[in-house]
Length: 453
Ligand code: 5AD
Ligand code: SF4
Image (tube, rainbow, N blue to C red; front, side, top):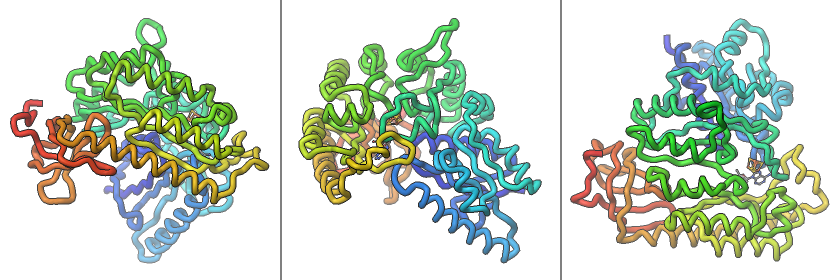
């Protein structure tokens, strides 16, 4: 009998990957995914703790699930197991158990391979289950072999955790110390994904370019070496990696952007701020000038590299002139895309203790809107610069409109075009007609339909 599994995923791509693996692990137990929580036999909230109000959001969604479970029980449609996973679970597991005692299980990002055991315990009525230890290696060892994401463009986790301890960030506390998977495991997983139809792989890690997994002949492999090895796999057409830290942007990795054709010309390289004093207070361990030099070097190897970043405005003590340094850095670098946030204190992080220097909310909002206006302007200019040009597009799925397909350019732009659906999965050349704020619109280049690809 099939049971229904509902997973609600918040936050980063690591969580998206983890949710897909949880579905893989539960599938042999008869669970198939549903997007309707009200009918679910098991509901998992895969939570994110990185920004404000994460725990409140978790509690309010839990409340909704509890009501759905009640309705299900009352109409005699069976029970619902409610679980909280991810980083809020890791950071606030005990609190969740206390405040929402109806939750059946709480487990951190390193424990989901134990889901079958936890489920068995829960159904034996063993009471609440709390699993928030950090046995990182175990998680990957226990992933089922058929852990395959059938998407054309799929994620592959190669590294987890972070030892950088940026002063504002909870990741080192919720995801733990850095851990890299051995290259043989990664290559095997990549091969399985390619066999199942994946054309584009994005290597994932909180600090992916700090990757240092066991490689061949007892040596440690770097991310660049892993990329060279993956680039040899037949059938893989595109490779990406995220998220990177400027300190780990080695010459070898920068050069891979010149030398590996399937490594896409797009890089998410957060800088967070432009002022050296703020960068130091954030414990980023690099200056604005060092970041600019890395970008220059990368663009030397790959002139068309599109850059993406993360920015935080209103870090404790940020003066107007220091915020202006961030604006200037953005003007100098020119981003194709970016994410930006108002600083919010995360309990337990060093920056949260700087209470006396907190920036008023209105100031943060005003700075954020100026910063986002500049970033939006740059993103639009970047997209418009493609008008009239040809880009290669991995055709991924059908759009909402009749006959429409959506794909991605090498630079991560979404591209909308008219094409028959049988071309999904191919890389086509598209002539861009219009560059918009968030996407490109174009048409297939008549002679180029890479049907052979
Ligand atoms: N406040 C605001 N933004 C934050 N980020 C991480 N922690 C915080 C915080 N306390 C942002 C950073 C990071 C991104 C994933 O989230 O910019 O790169
Ligand atoms: Fe957080 Fe900094 Fe590590 Fe990124 S590098 S995960 S911002 S501590």
